[in-house]
Length: 118
Image (cartoon, rainbow, N blue to C red):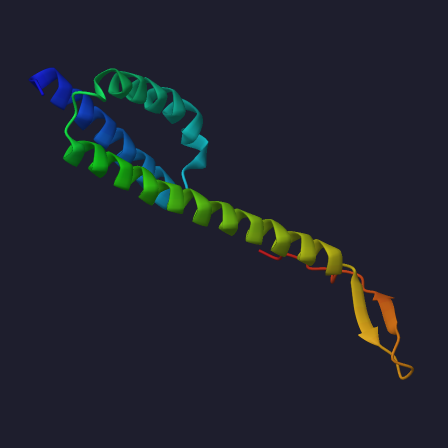
């Protein structure tokens, strides 16, 4: 492996590290620009995949696997947040209770009025 090959591996490694940081910081608004640089780095990597050492390839695969787990965790967190917001929206304005007969009764609740004084 020559110096140029090592630079490409370092570029891919740095790209995966940046991706990890974006995921850990929840900086999803930066992903659109990032995806293009990631794609370019991996296109360069594919050209040297046959010359790269198995150690380097294994390290890159491990980083990819770690980032995939972070993507899955982020997705689960976003889904949980969406479900929670949906539940809150569903109950705002309505209070569900059980009556003496065991049936669900819905009561409309008005939001309290808050006044701000300086």
